[in-house]
Image 1 (cartoon, one colour):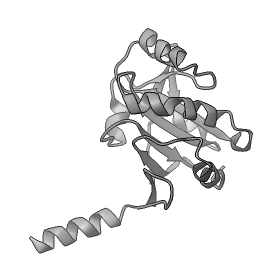
Image 2: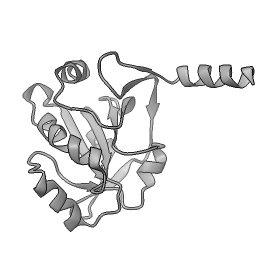
Image 3: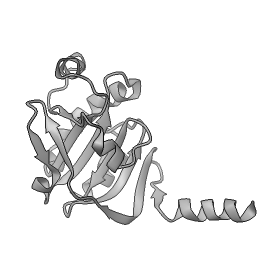
Image 4: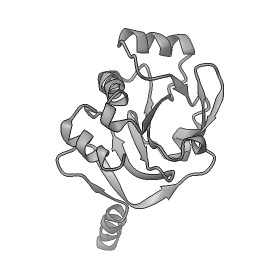
Length: 169
C-alpha cells in the first residue's frame, strides 16, 4: 500500500507544477505535442490547429449547461481583445453537443463580442486532450506545444494571470 501511495505521489508530481497565486493554472513539466487537432466553426467548416502555428493559443472547452463556463466566458471574451496579447488566439470550443442556435444564444445572452463559436461535436478533442471536466483551457505555445492547463473556472481578467500569459506572447 505504501508503495502505491508513493508511486501515485511521484507520478502526479512528474507532470506539472501549479502556478502560485493563480488558481487552477498548472504548468506542464514536459511540453506535449498533439497531431491532427481539428474542430468546426459556426459554419461547419473544419479548422486545423496547425494553421495557427506562430500564435499563442488558448483552447477553452465549455458547454451551455455549465454554470462555471457561463461565469468565466465574459472575462475570456475580454482577454481576446487585450492589445498586449495581440498574438493570442482563443478558441472557445463547445463540447456540450449543443446546436448552433443554443450556443449562439448563450454568447448573445452574455454579450460576447470578441470570440467566435467553435464545436467539437463528436467530442474527439475532449478525448484526445483527456478532459476530466469543463471548463478546461489548454494553453499552446507558438511552436504548437501544450505548456499549461487551466482546470475549472478562472478569471481571465486577473492581472497576475495576464502578466504571466504575456511572457508567452
